[in-house]
Each structure stands twice: as C-alpha cells, then as structure tokens.
Length: 123
Image 1 (cartoon, rainbow, N blue to C red):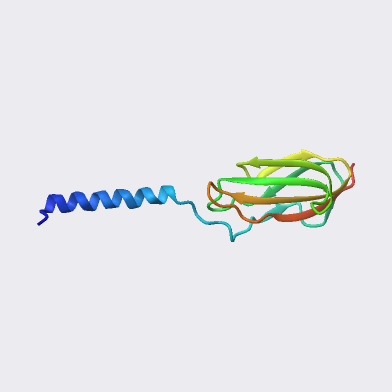
Image 2: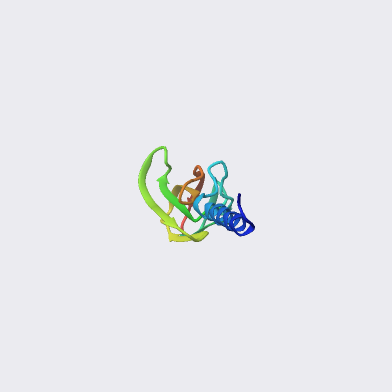
C-alpha cells in the first residue's frame, strides 16, 4: 500500500515525464502552408533589389527558400537554396523570369513548398 508521500512522489514523476514529452515532440506542420506577404504571385518588379517576405508560422523553426530561373520545371539556373530562421530574405536579381518557393520546417516536419512566379524588369 502506498503512503501519501510515495503517491505524491509518483505523481510528480509522471508530471515531469509528461511535461518533458512536450519538449520532445514537435508540432506536425506538414499540412500547413506559409503565408506569403511579398512579392505577389505573377508580380512584375522594376527594381533589381528584392525582399522575399512571409509570415512567421507557429511551430516552424526555420524556412527553406529556393529561387530559380525561369522556373522549377525547367531550371536554367538555381539562384538560391537557403535555410533561414527569419521571415525575410533580400537579394539582387538581374532582369528575367523567376520562380521562388518557400516551406516551413521544424526538426521533425516540413510543409510542402508554396511557389510563386515573378518578373524582374530592371531599373
């Protein structure tokens, strides 16, 4: 038969175990998608200095951003393939047609890539 002290100690041990489990298991974000702020899909930009910007996603620790020219179906040039922890990425691009995509990840899950196209016309 358990006395109160043993029962209390057992309860505390279980509480510690279940609290620690929250730190071990990552949120499954694989069915979610990042919210893109800029540039808009199909946008034509007159400058060459661009900032790609999206909302932070709950449960994401980092983002993978890729930029290709002219697109991912037929890549002539992979401009960027980077992993970043912020929600913005700045780059200078030459005139041309591009496709960019972003996905959010944590240590266990990644969302699918969300793709957008853009045209850079220069100055």
